[in-house]
Length: 300
Image (tube, rainbow, N blue to C red):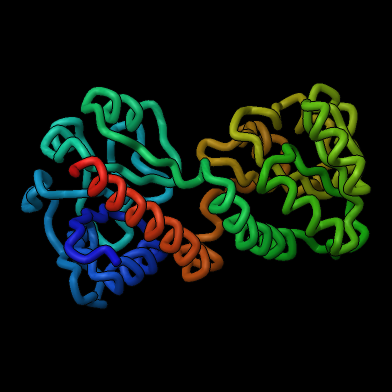
């Protein structure tokens, strides 16, 4: 149980509602910031303006999956107001306060470092990333069906990257009958691709292998689908970029050439927010209880 633990939940999408529900069931006391347009009420959770919250009493801060942008702004789907997480705000929190976010960036890293607080990146955890890949794959299948005029079965597809999402994507599209290539540059990943019965491609050879591709699915969070790669693709190719913003695709060049390219981060929050939210809620509940127990032991 999290009885009496004070947590600020700042912004987010429908996934945050599952987190709020789970934590209030465990009797945590939540300050909901950026939720004033939310009709639903939770016992133990209070909608507040960020300037009205006493951060000196907060045991934890929960940010959306995206964390903040590079200016410190937090996405607030349930509010029209702009909300920012600042160094000054973090400085007001007690030393034991932990910030939880899906991912991080240079801004968030900087204010965490300057205030000597702890940051937990949930998507760095294998359990979160692997389970989250399930709704990601389902959303990718949905997009592939919506934006092509042929079946997935028999289509020629390349997946870029064999991380936790890339592996799930490659395995599922293969099971649906697609002819799947996977591009990677680590020897162990190449070995795994072969073991899975898929076609391995070295990333540096990407330009040579996309000449007959129907669908390209990128999971690598830096520019890999360059103008040179797009130039070699058939015009009917569909690019689905699952990497976090700004993705790994040269979108302006794709548009110029007439190749459809879609940036699709945060698919779980779009296609299955309840499932995705429950995945995060379960892990957060566990982490908060572990942190509470650790704090009690250190205070003895």
